[in-house]
Amino acid sequence: MPERGAAAWDNETHGDPIVSCAICEKRKEKRFCPAVHGRICAQCCGEQREVTLDCPGDCVYLQQAREHEKPRALPDLDQAALFPQIEIGDQFLYEHEHLIVGLTFALAKAARADRSINDADLIAGLTAITRTHETLANSGIIYETPTASLSQQAIAGEVRKMLKEYHEAEQKHLGYSRLRDSDVLRALAFLVRMGYARTSGRPKARAFVDFVVAQFPEQPAIAAPEEVGSRLIVP
Image (cartoon, rainbow, N blue to C red; front, side, top):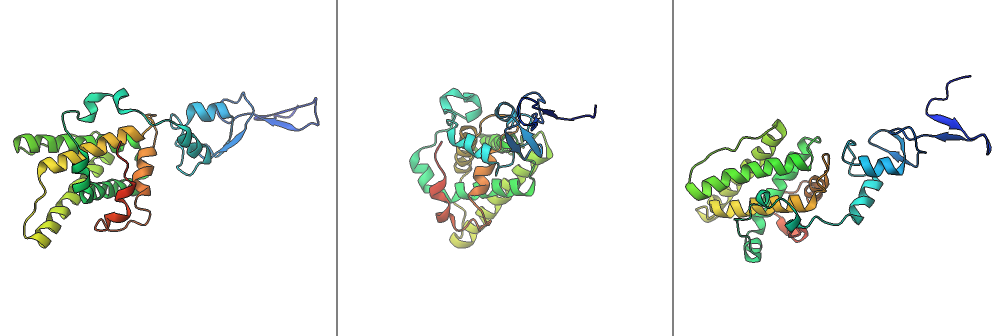
């Protein structure tokens, strides 16, 4: 008898093949999965989505899942990771919208340059540079918090580059730079909290990455934040 591979024949109906899931090879396939370039069952889709599968952001099933997924409440997260000692009020967000948008642009630029970056990488890189600025704001000492990967180093590098350009722009237009280290610290901590609120927390999750990239679909200059600022939702 010839091999049937992943398909079995339903002899009780019309001889139509019943193709099994490309992942579990047990249940019947129900949908096409771009991550495996094959058809899988709904259960494997739900269980392995962004866990073992590198789901692309344009997958309709991933998008549907995100629409129905409840945002993670900040009180339910690891509070120590959210820099709870840093106070961030609405007035600060209003007055420093340009800075926050600029930092978001730096994150988006890093994510576009390396498509393998996921939420965990983005949050880790952002956290490392936030800790560096916490030390700088509190003691005036520049101590670079170590990063665990090249991608996280690239993220921190884009943030540092953006802050340098921000200082230079203020110096050029005002004659001095009014941006304080404490302001940068608050803006970075805000984005860390946003990252934790937006990610699902799954190992390969990219909801936060996709969010920051979506703010700059054509990579506009950071000097035009009015088109983006209103879409940055406070976590």
